[in-house]
Amino acid sequence: MNLTGEMLIGQTAVKGSRDPIQAINPATNERLEPGYPGGTQAEVERACQLAWDAFDAYRETSLEARAKFLETVADEIEALGDALVERAVAESGLPQARIQGERGRTCGQLRLFARVVRDGEWLDVRIDPALPDRQPMPRVDLRQRHVALGPVVVFGASNFPLAFSVAGGDTASALAAGCPVIVKAHAAHPGTSELVGRAIQAAVKKSGLPEGVFSLLFGSGREVGTALVSDPRIKAAGFTGSRSGGLALWKAAQSRPEPIPFYAEMSSINPVYPLPAALKARGEAMGKAFVGSLNMGAGQFCTNPGLVIARKGPELDAFVAAAGEAVKESGAQTMLTPGIFEAYESGVAGLAGSGKAREIARGAKGEGPNQCQTGLFVTSAADFLGDEALQAEVFGSTSLVVECADDDELKQVTEHLEGQLTVTLQMDDADTETARALLPALERKAGRILVNGWPTGVEVCDAMVHGGPFPATSDSRTTSVGTAAIFRFLRPVCYQDLPEALLPEALKQDNPLKLKRLVDGKREG
Ligand code: NAP
Image (cartoon, rainbow, N blue to C red; front, side, top):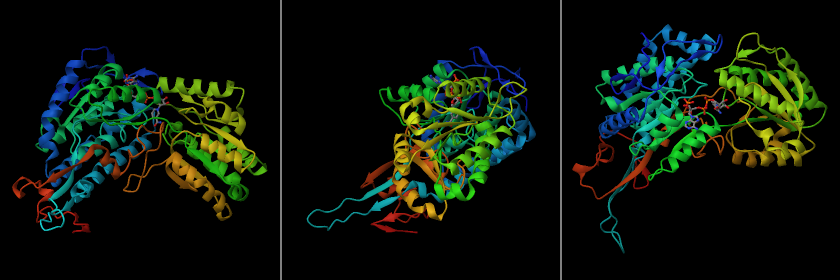
């Protein structure tokens, strides 16, 4: 497929009029053709109107039709073949195997949401039939189901050009819920975005759906992104990126006459706690494995382990020494964009120049452009508690070890943490009581608690929570990965005393959709 540099508004390809965005191959700093001129208010207006026009029809598509549509999107993405992989590698600097894996995850999560749509549990049907003879008051007939919120804006993430971008988790869960989607493409991978956008566009057509079910816009976040979240026809948004970008858009979403849910995933440093018995038994091996996780994807994972918190002592010293050796052996890796590389360099320089973090080791220096050097630093609990800057996310493969004098200090450091996507305990049986004492604080701080694993690598499944208190996300009640992500884009509606002829299929008396429903307090089906 030839790239045209056009936006996709429904079934129409439209050339923007703002200065073109051009992807840069971060491995070479070469500019990639074509340019992608950005959109303006006019394209925002058109995409929002089409999405609004499509909404009522799309949200009431049959479960089978919507599931088949999601599967068709996955099929169309796979049909793009090597061209998609080649373009995504060129635009992101990520290795081919990683991009192939990400394509698998993208199509896998679309098919997973197709399964979710088909089994219909997300409708969460509850029926409390009328009790006309109840004393002292009769009960009316009450039936509840979930309905889609409305058109959703998705901001593609830079660090997952496939799995969290145009057809990624936010898009898949919003489409599954019955919401039309408008994607604001990330400027780092416009060609990948166009390819995937065209695949979704083709799936919309093949599935006979209204064209406004999907649009893809290019352009600046400040102009196009803000206009999208401010448009009254948009009813929710999903975002992955920086804290400053997330907060700016969140503010726009909250300052509308009708504020809307804005699900931003922003900043997390994912603390790891090597507990004393585990440190003693396998500190060295743990140190090496930790650096393996730190280096994954050049550290550009939202679940990258940017912080280690542990009791000071010879066992921690052995962990740090082994991790330091592994850091020294770490090769330089190309980062996603020149901007992200510069932000990484300045974050590491800030840490090194803080006067409060001791450098333990640095990895190999890059020979090519935009290559990050892995880093490991150590600080004391007192310095960590006294300097907010030491908690800032350094997006990339650098981590900070916080040495605590005793369990009290470890608890203080934990209580001082901002909200996180994950926390990880490295523990042996003898650490059980220490872990038990930490758990209540960890539950307050994070969306996922791991034992003896590493936070990088997020399974897309029913039980996953990829979320957490601010600033990990803007709304800790939800997840952006896994099937529960669908609930971000739904709301309950209760129907009181509607005649059978007016009831939606899901709520009809004889359960034509064969759903598992809660009827008069008992589970049906
Ligand atoms: P970003 O700068 O936040 O950009 C993400 C999206 O938000 C882009 O579409 C951008 O539009 C838009 N945007 C940014 N600032 C905005 C503003 N003030 N108003 C309206 N829209 C705005 O994120 P990024 O480019 O992916 O990476 C930059 C940094 O974000 C990284 O260095 C890292 O610190 C952090 N990051 C964190 C995670 C995580 O999972 N924790 C993931 C990725 C990135 P434009 O097209 O105009 O830029």
